[in-house]
Image (cartoon, rainbow, N blue to C red; front, top):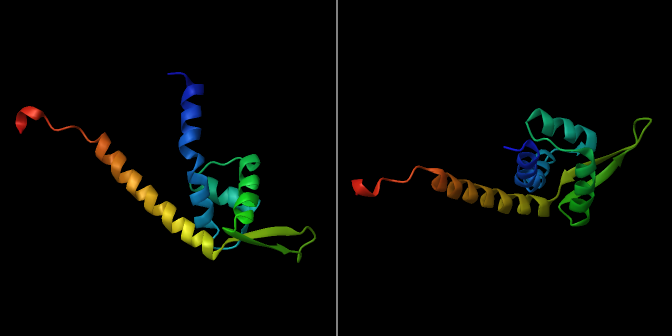
Length: 116
């Protein structure tokens, strides 16, 4: 198997899961770099060039709220899942569970028609 082709398919599979992962983790306030670390620690690999535009998009859509922390020498923008983000997350998690069940059923070995 061509490793590049496999990598492309894996990327496609993970693309939508990053939104779900961010909404889950950002139930507690967090900033971009910290979010990257938390996701990586849990096996959700994300590139900063993908994550930061995603955070801005989710904020613009109203699924994240943000505020600046200026207590340190370098201001940082913290994000948190909004009420609408919680609603979206609940819908996406239900879809995820439904897809997981469907794929599990599809992947199960078919019964031998001669046994029926």
